[in-house]
Length: 124
Image (cartoon, rainbow, N blue to C red; front, side):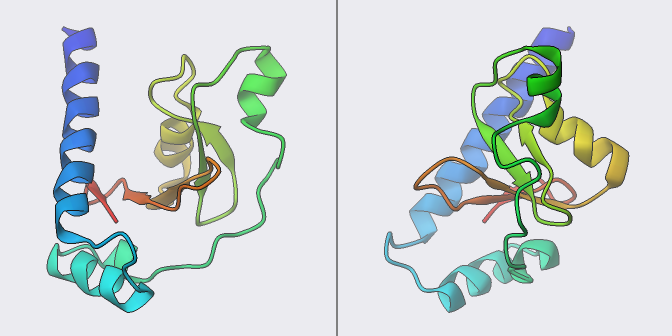
């Protein structure tokens, strides 16, 4: 049951990303992205907070401490915490949200700038 819940949650994220990609041109301006996220009803993403300095810049601090390997990295836009994605063993980005309630994270992968709002469960 828990595994299926996790799989369905990941599918929901993928669906929201596909939905957003269908509404956004690849060269969309900052203003266009804000307008789209506002239409979707997410004030957290519409704020478009600047990306803070990564802490730590080397990767997921918990994975580095535990000696585990991450799949992808995310950065918290509230404080700069770098954590691993939900496809990673530790799911440290989500655990960080659970502990802090910082609502928005951004991909910390090279060439990616999409953001995820944990509160509204939407990508922007």
